[in-house]
Image (cartoon, rainbow, N blue to C red):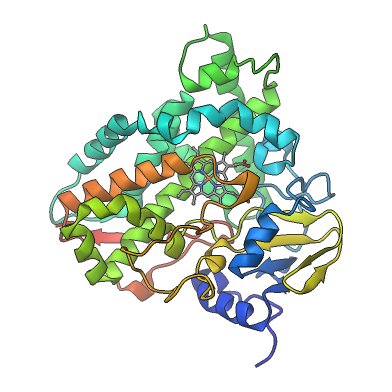
Length: 401
Ligand code: HEM
């Protein structure tokens, strides 16, 4: 078998086979992504955890002369960055990262997020009430998308009427697109968020999350305008692009594994704990955001030279057979603790408690109301989004019953 140096053009449609090969051939490998960009791809669980925590592997890709950001997809051409959202914590190393994360940390603890449960349940119930037995719908459009976008828009004080625009802009930013498409989406999103921050800044402070953040004064420190816009962008995009696909990927996995579906229908009290298994098996973030080596780093038995791009595949790490038995199988009763679907180390997902809450509520209500839910398309015809960051379907056609 020849060594894999170029990821196949259809990589995003079936990344797991590619990861299995890479893991077996050599855990840390220099590969070309489908559009040509050369990166070091990490596929083993242990290496992934090291790569995500080694301070020599930096998140400050701009300081390293790399122009990639959360929203710039990898490409052979290095794109000019749009700096409107660059001042976000996911783009930074300590101490800048620590400073930004401190402003929002307290609002996202599991205890604070649990207080949102009644409202999340209410939103889910309203969405479910609009669906009827016998309907054939795209579950992403009808349920999995509106739930998290409504929650995050409420948290940020953004009118929900704008949600379809957000979805379009953010889909464009996280997928492969032309430079013009990306510039247009990014410009519109920036314009909207700048207006939103200005509006909230000019209003009397109140105790809602975003107003408190705009007017926050943490030990005499404030977020400047660019940081507020970047924070709103990060929370808005991270707050829905991921959870929608966790719900979609999990429902697909259950419909393809009826025995596992039956277990959760019989024992819905297992749903909260099973969230970890869905995150492990079908997490919505394939490759964590870009990192680069600030100096040469030895990882997985190879030395990555300085100034190289490092990409850690979270979905590959989570299916590493050295970490999990029968790693490719869904087992809703297993203890999947330790998975890296939310990342690892200082950038560990800030929104993890919210994502877990939304998922638990969504799956519980969906299975209770439509226990005979079924796929309305052949599994082979389902198409995955053209993104190395997000692992999620374009549409998930289901029949409700
Ligand atoms: C960071 C996954 C939901 C906000 C991350 C990272 C991952 C991740 C893997 C780290 C990326 C890296 O190190 O390159 C997920 C998954 C979610 C989810 C799988 C849902 C199933 C959310 C939600 C929010 C959120 C609902 C906000 C409301 C953030 C933020 C960061 C982050 C702010 C940056 C943290 C930092 O840099 O310190 N997420 N996320 N995420 N996530 Fe999430």
